[in-house]
Image (cartoon, rainbow, N blue to C red):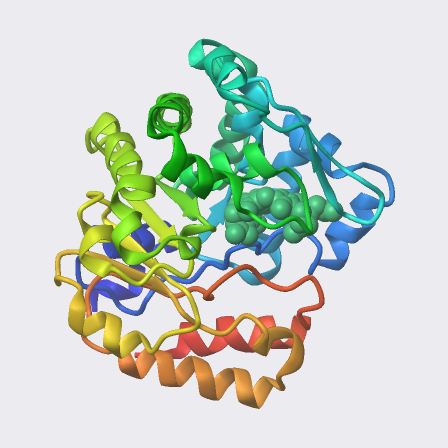
Length: 345
Ligand code: CP3
């Protein structure tokens, strides 16, 4: 049985390339961070900003969930907002975790954004990735990530937590020239940033289009999809791309981005998506994240088995949630989930 010697990293690579696997690899969005007691202990001493800015600390937080759960992949501990910050729009979190951002006021502010310095300003991420890769070796996969231009544009125009995201869509409809200029700069900066991450050894990159669901089907291509396609094209196959557009439902338009794997949220039946996606594109996600906080281990096991059965025989399946791990997820539920996927055959 040659599969018996498969490493976690190889299992991830097999799935990213839609090759047969012994079982689907598993990692979870937001697997690092507040759900883990060892992260909360670090947060007694350091702020979130300090944790992502210091390469040794970012490395430690990235590795915490891998140590505890032996996930098939680690994901860089950082935030999508570091790219908008490197473009000149800083962010911070207040004491209760609320996000505060300066926002772009007008097309003049957009014209002043300069992607030229983004990679220089994000060298602390490069340093963290090199450290993480050194520690993981070839045993565990490593994922980099960035936000999509559409999602970053929303944060940069409307700012922090608890706001309604309306200005990006308004700009898209009222001033397409300014919207395109903003999206183009974000795509440029993001492509450069992801190339840097790939140069530091990540096995794949995920593009988070967390606000994709704000778009109507006929708006998706021009407002989000084409800018993601520009990034994928610019990456030129240096590493596989996972595209996760939360709430978006137009699968053909998502496939057009050229991404190797499509992320799927938990508000849809994955069997329906499986029927609509070509076999050459991988599929990731779909388990309801709130099972981890509100469910019992037995319920988690049942739901995970159900999902695995729906995906049986489908190459390119990466097990994940439909969105991030909730901060109040129970450790016993996480353990049960990982064990259920690991035992599947
Ligand atoms: O997945 C991981 O484990 C890697 C780390 C990661 C974080 N943010 C850490 C984080 C990743 C991949 C992200 C991506 C991110 N950041 C997204 C896309 C994914 C998604 O959830 O849809 C978005 C939209 C953001 C922007 C962001 N970051 C907001 C709006 C907030 C505040 C609200 C919140 O959830 O706390 C953050 C903060 C943030 N990013 C935290 C962490 C661990 C919480 C900071 C803390 O510890 O207090």
